[in-house]
Amino acid sequence: MSDGSAILERPGERPGSPMPLRSDFVWGVSTSAYQIEGAAAEDGRGPSIWDTRCRTAGGVVNGDTGDVACDHYHRYAEDIGLMRGLGVDAYRFSVAWPRVLPRGRGAVNPAGLDFYDRLVDTVLEAGIEPWLCVYHWDLPQALHDLGGWANRDCAGWYADYTALLARRYGDRVKRWITFNEFSVFTLFGYAIPWAAPGITDREQHLRAIHHVNLAHGAGVDVIRVLVPGASIGAVHNRQRVLPEGGRPENEEAAALLDEHWNLTFCDPQLLGHYPPRVAQAIEPYVQPGDMARICRPMDWFGLNHYGPIFAKVDPTRTWGYGWGDAPPDSPTYGVGWPIFPDVFRDELLEITRRYRMPIIITENGCGGSDSPDESGTIDDQHRINYLRIYNAAMHEAIRAGTDVRGYFIWSLLDNFEWGSGYGNRFGIVHVDFQTQKRTPKASARWYADLIKRERFRA
Ligand code: FCB
Image 1 (cartoon, protein in one colour):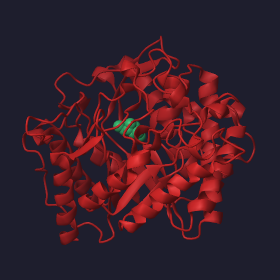
Image 2: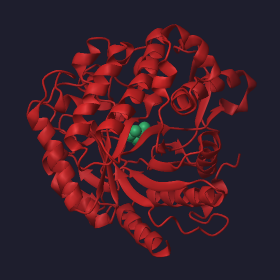
Image 3: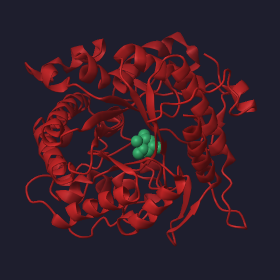
Image 4: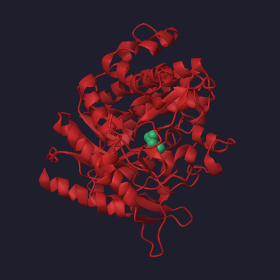
């Protein structure tokens, strides 16, 4: 594996010339409800497990919460104006389950449903295609109180919630995503306590994995029936897992984490079986017919990718593995995440080899602590460099035969970055969280130019 440092010296210069992309290639930006909406207790929204997490000591850096976030609930029209300015084709957003069903099931909240009507209509009026993600981590607290994803009934609650959305928005929304990053919210929610609900229990983790897979399958079926012409994907985070220091004693840790992180959702959903280590452990929770329920025909593979992971043995953790360090000389960006564009290219090729599907890159981007200079400009060259080399790596994968059909930057706005609170800024638009003023960063201009250039070449 190359470490990408040669590339960093000449950002954007990768071997070979870029290929023209498909003429229908989709350029977009991604966000998620809890990270931007705010209005947490407004117009009848119920609490989610993230509202609870933010109020738990040590849950989020600085005790930050999503109560106000980017106030997108009130400022969505301005934000859609920013997207129009970028020239994007598509906007990937998520619906907050507790905004439309405050207790997760039962009585609907008309004001919550109205909000997403306004959002979808304004996005369409701007000439942008809405891509709706049903679940981006904000489970209603009332459902968690009934066991949450560790309860098999949660798959049915999710299917009912999906049906509500499909009936309401399916006339205007044709791009559907069942879940965002299955393995992150199950692993960090139920085994390693870095996310809501912060449980550390093997059995609950295994149950959650299986029930989320069942929910995914049920959601796909519901959308297929209720939304004619729907194009359905699921968003998987795939990050190559490498043993820390290349040391043999970390190899089994890396192999198990690789299953939990990269295979436990993709394989059953797309190939109809669990990877070997998980298959054995999860058997007690699998009922006859489940695999057929989980493995449903999909239209595309959604990939979120940032960089590789290094695993090490850690007996204090639920599964005996923990997060290790990247090699000390690795190139890093903003918040210290390693930059390995070759790994990104190779992930795209591996997905093609293993699942043989079109790919949409649903998230890629770069965090940092960007702040305006005296003139108010935010010159985030570190992000531009990252995006440039990752786009070049995408082109390499396409040249090598991968069918990539779209690319979404994470994220439109600086926002509530889960456990890191507001300290880690991923936006191409800066948000002043005191005044809610939005200021496009240099990377926003760069992205708008890239889109124009690529369209011209297509
Ligand atoms: C992904 C999440 C997204 C955001 C980015 C930085 O794992 O899907 O919500 O937090 O990371």
